[in-house]
Image 1 (tube, rainbow, N blue to C red):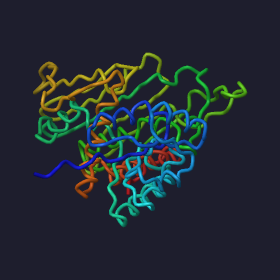
Image 2: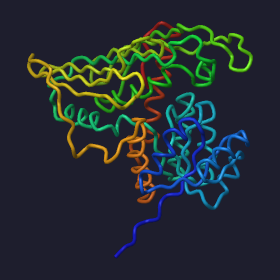
Image 3: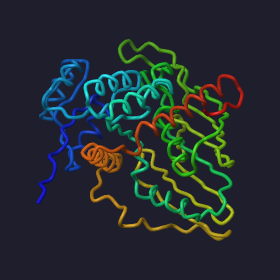
Image 4: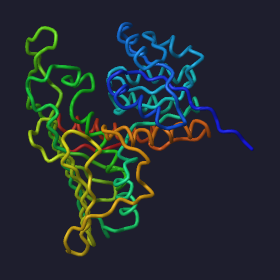
Length: 362
């Protein structure tokens, strides 16, 4: 009888999302264990490591040299993500990346090439692919419930940055990967491509409503140039269109609502929860012009356990899949191919807004 493989020993780079979501998710899988944390500030790295009872590193090269690290999750701010991933793969470590995987499609493409050449398994945290109701939605679309898909409308209107007194951070800088396109858009592009295939062209308008925020150190106002409101039109290779509206500054915004319209049915999945990005979703279907009827979540897809932070359960599901793929030496979906595809659309959105023209996605 074959004994089970030992858990994948994982280091986590980044202490924000990394500690809030990644660490508890890794500890929940049974296929992974957390052995180290990394942060460039030695004091923060040491304090976090002591709290989590793991090793702490402020030198990334030292972490990669550790005999207790098999793989790395990179959950840092976007501006350093690609560089850390390159270093980890060069050291022979499989990686799991928070999204967006890079600051540009060119960077993301280089990461994918490196992963393919190194034959390393790389996963990407597109967690909506692991949420039960979205998996149920994807199956319904694949089974043809809509008939001929005609139109998609996605409103993702959040209030997380509606307070102008919220302190300035990297999120306010476009060149550091800040803005609603990187925070929400790449999730939206992956979700829609998962459901309906590749995007062919983009039109977009990006704007910044909150133009300055107080510096957390000095209190002086600092300029913000990253978009917090985005209006996007997508045309898919199959010919159908989608309207995507994103915002992080909509007080009392409606949350996330995805509406699908086809020749045979309307399907709506959405949540008004402004405090959590996963808890609270419902799935409704109206067939042949009838009323919307709420669908029951299929028990086979449900989470064995949930947490107050709704992101932990789907991320744990993805991390478990990543660890399994690493053990079997096979690619993971979502991986860098999906991360690159989403970033290509994100780059096209930026270009379309800057030029005022439709941009082909290539």
